[in-house]
Every structure is written in C-alpha cells, then in structure tokens.
Length: 300
Figure 1 (cartoon, rainbow, N blue to C red):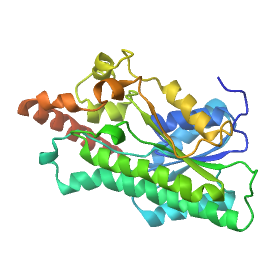
Figure 2 (figure 1 turned 45 degrees about the vertical axis):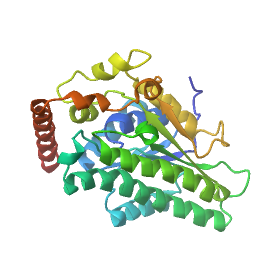
Figure 3 (figure 1 turned 180 degrees about the vertical axis):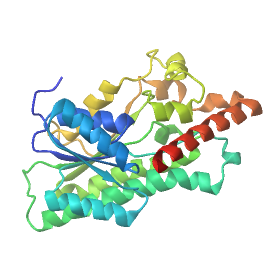
C-alpha cells in the first residue's frame, strides 16, 4: 500500500511495543524505513522483539524496560532517546483492561487501569511533547518543517460509554480529550495529535481478559455489521498514514476503525448484562489465572 522508505528519517517511540498491536505497528514502521524505539514493563520481551524485528527486516529497533506509570522513569527514558537524536513521532499504545461488573470493582482494580491508560499516556506524551515545544522555541522547528506527530490508541467507547469496562472507558476518554486539547495547544509548535479507536483485532492478551473462554474474534464477528473482526494490517496501514507526512492538516481527530460496530451495536460490552453470577465467576477465574501466569513470566 505504501512506497518503500515512506517513513525514512522518522524516529518513532511505541509504548507497549513488545507485543500485540504495538509490536505489529512497530514492525510496519520499521519496514518503511523508520528508526524504532519500543518500551514495556518486561524488558526481556522488548529485547526479544527488537532482535526479532531487526533479524527479519534490518534497520534499528532499541528497547527499554519502563513502567509508564512511573513518571520519573518515563522522563529518564525519553531523555536518553533524545540524547541520541530527537524523536519525530510517538505512538501511545500501552494499556490494560479487563471486564468486571462495576459494583464488584475495587479501587485497586480501577487504579490498575487508570494508572496505565490515563496517567501513563500523559506522562509519556508530556515528556516527549515538552521537549518538542522547547525545540520549537529554540528555532529547531519552523513553519514548513515536517510536523512531529503523536498517535494514541483509544476505543470506540469514548463516544458511547463502556459498561463492564468503566475504568478503561473513563481513561480512554481522557486520552481522547488530551488528543483534542493538545492538538490545539501545541499545533503552533509543529506538533499534531490524532487517535485511532480500533474495534476488536484479536491478540492473545486482549482476548484472555476481555473474552475469557471465547475463540478470539468470534463474539465481535457475530454482531459486527461487516461480519468479522479487524485485521492487524488494517491498523498498521491507518497508523502509518497518521504518522506520515501525507496529510499534516489532519489534527485533533479520533478515527474509529471497527467496521461500523459502534454505530450499529454500541461497540461495547452491553450484552454482558445477561451473564449469570456463575459466568462472571468463571470469567474472573480465567482472568486471574492469566494474571498469575503473566506475573510468573515477569519474575522469571
């Protein structure tokens, strides 16, 4: 779809870039000539991803082990990257989510999502963005130069709410608001911000926490107007367009890419109101088992 070298000269940081959607987008950017930085809580996973991507495609992928909930750690990472050369682009992809009746949600459960999605996304955007603002003030960006770009992954729930995923709906709505707010505040410094709200694109982590026990993509395909789940290459292509210089006047927009599901069905988990207590208990058990597995992998 895109010409070779489209992203040559771009230096892109992808949060949560070691797995899932983040890894997929990073790979696409790499194949189109960008220099890539990825970060995640598990540095070993990010290191392995960096090695695999460079072995497959060449180029440069550098990995950082950073918990984006830690503002000081985020700033240290961004400082290290800018010491090697300023970033041109940021992809806010790192997130977390799980399904739960809101009445059964604990403050700790709420914070587990909000601290990553809302606080963490702001910490990274602020650390990168304030350096870009300073560069513009010093004359290192001038009108006519390529814009620096922030692209955030949100959800369609920012438009119509998200029952049973309220921490995510609230936090992603904050990222949506940040995108619109900073698009107008920072445009004069050569910075533009946009967001993508993808429907279900099956990944291992997403499926095990949002559709425990289901075959990935099956539930959403049944109710989607197009009769299927999303494909990874569709997200890759839209993300590439937003980071390219093809339409720099596109600013402050959130693009919903879900086959029209949010228009036809609300695009959320409203149907879970029909679950029995037993089904919720089974789902919680599956999610906790996955969490324990993930904790064991991180400590290994």
